[in-house]
Amino acid sequence: MAHLQEQLDAITANTRDLVQPERLAIGERAVEELFNSGIEARILPVGAAAPEFALPDFSGKIVRSSDLLALGPLVVNFFRGRWCPYCVTELEAWRDLYPALRERGALVAGISPQVPRQSDFTASQHSIPFPLLTDSGCVVAERFGLVWTLPDYMRRYSLSILLNIPFINGDESWRLPLPATYVIGPDGKILYGEAHADFRVRPEPEEVLRALPVFARSESLRNP
Image 1 (tube, one colour):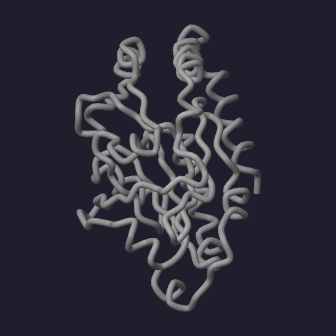
Image 2: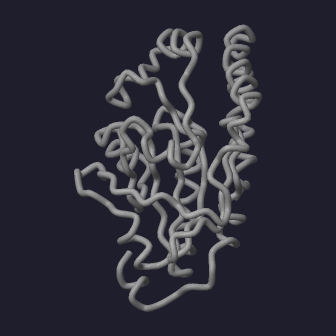
């Protein structure tokens, strides 16, 4: 199977073949401005205490980070939404590696600002076995240093391609998280963290797995 980044690069190449250069330039401008803002340097770093969260899954059940961490290390994947093919491809990579993750006594949770119904669609259509949680208004993502607000020209462009982010997210803020992956140890400390201003770049899940501590106990394996 191709590495995740190879799959994402194929999406980029296909997009460049299908989309007019002037429309591609809009997204490139947003990526460049976001990178120049220095946001990558402001994400919560390795060694910091991870903010606790209590967020609903698509059934409305509140999932608490403290409960997940009681079972072992936690991989947290912040993603933009089901409308993003890069995010869906990354979620599918974690789906395929989920058994290997559980063998290490770890769990994974996806977090996005999309409303629970959108996460329900995501889980159903892509057979995601782990919780997909709704971070309304990107409140939790902001505590990890990941949030940015789409500029006006990106809002107009999104609506022109029928991507209504306020409808998908259930608010008018136009806030999104940087796609990011964190590994949080059972003690609540960040063991791994990576986020990119360029949404087309993601860490390889195998690299993230290597950051997991040796932590396997029968209790965690019995309680996925």
